[in-house]
Length: 188
Image (cartoon, rainbow, N blue to C red):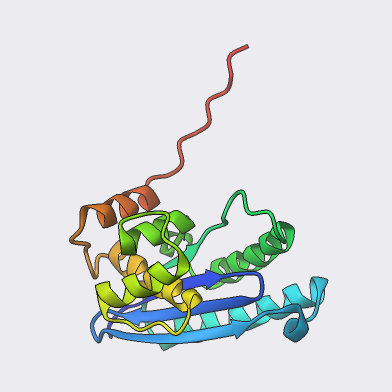
């Protein structure tokens, strides 16, 4: 059975997940509306997001082998709703680690997502949509799905099912694979 790779783009009110299978070039998209209007507020919302994601991840796990999962990390420096985004990100990570071993999970900085498809870590949303189409002939319906699709392609490259041809893509993978260097203590 061929391996599937997951790419996850989560924002304050939405979540796009792409399940990409290189062997068949098939990409299945799932979009969730996690807005407070649909999901409630506070702990009720977090419990809802966790339950929905756990059910989705468990269904993917049971459907067949998953080779790697790449999800977009936090946009450090973002000012709006950062606490709520942190809570939602934490709930998503909890659902992931409850379903798969840690070695399958890869956090990808937003700038690395952009660089993997465009060659630049500073591409805007419209450029991302176009770049995804130009590079892979995948017509994403929105920028969340374009990011999730790119993350799924990163996961496939990390799983070695699709080794990258381009230098900037290899640089992105090297960055993801290298653990963060330990912070040095200041000498007094």
